[in-house]
Length: 167
Image (cartoon, rainbow, N blue to C red; front, side):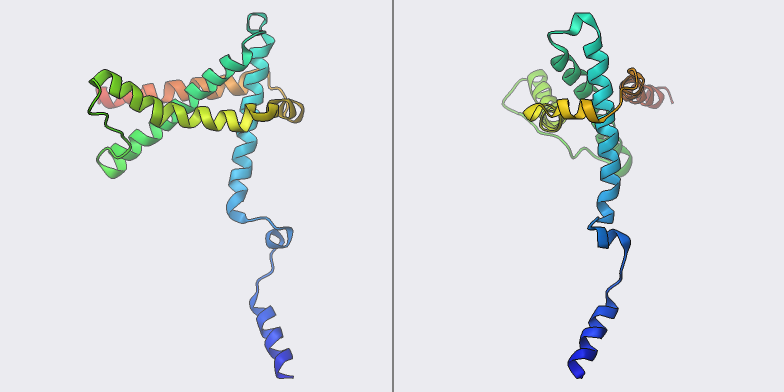
């Protein structure tokens, strides 16, 4: 009888939730929504660029360049705000002392800001032609979603920079 009481006690300590029953980790729920938005923007970008007749041969490269540029500007904004407004000093840098300053800065920018997003975009969109499945799964918003994301990604950091310089 004692063993039965202990097993009931152990079971009563466990909390039941619908999320745990379905095997969903609540921490991963925002990432599911973020990935849905990420894929929606990508599909909108792919179809918008593919729809233009001049891009029939190189629409993959052009879409990769545009999305990587937008994501690079977003990442740059996050890092610079974190470095100067929160931490107070630069922490996300690589110093190439053996190279000339301009070449070192360019290489640092390529490695820290562009390369991560090129790799992520390739692995999530273009590897094994995953974009074919995504094109069938997500609706086309006639380029509005992509243009909104791209323009806000480019202009928000520029406006913030100018506001810091002027004020």
